[in-house]
Image (cartoon, rainbow over all chains, first blue to last red; front, side, top):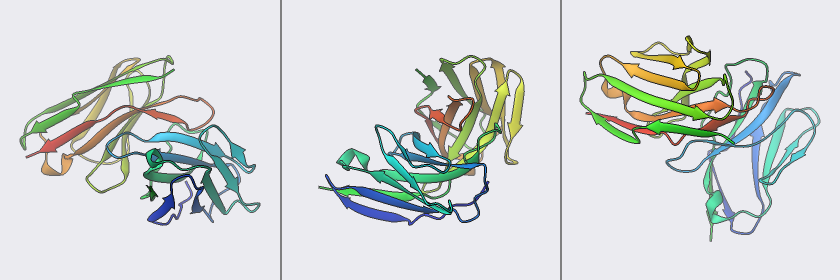
Length: 111
Length: 113
């Protein structure tokens, strides 16, 4: 699976959009980009995934660049409960073994 | 919807003692199941995964083992715990057969003294 690079930490004001970047320059053509988050002392939670098109669900939006070498997770209106470690993961979808978690980005939403 | 039960929630064990952590899942039949460990201040490490009853794949060499005696039961064991086995143990279930969406349980926090 391709490796990803994320900033170790970010702050965001409550109510504002949080934009979390991820670099995955070695991604291959059939690898997907997945985002998970982990609130302190809980298990990770799936947020969203995409291949090459932008995606949106009730939690977030995922913007993938045209060359697929980077992506941005957008939380449109961050709340204090969005404070968590956010993981960007690149993985094939076919195999049972998957989801290699890196160190992620600690997002702190400030009041 | 998915539900994962893990017990115990917390555990304190002496070095050299045995370990048995249990995970049971509800929802999809014949799910792919996973054991992860998160050491303090570290990322998640995949320990084992299972695609069916009696089928276990180990990701890292260690003194832990896993078993899947029933379709929705996944057990993590050790004969003799080490200090380095301390951590947050998470069981997960693959919820989509096409994509790598996994649902995680509440976890067991293990402290080895």
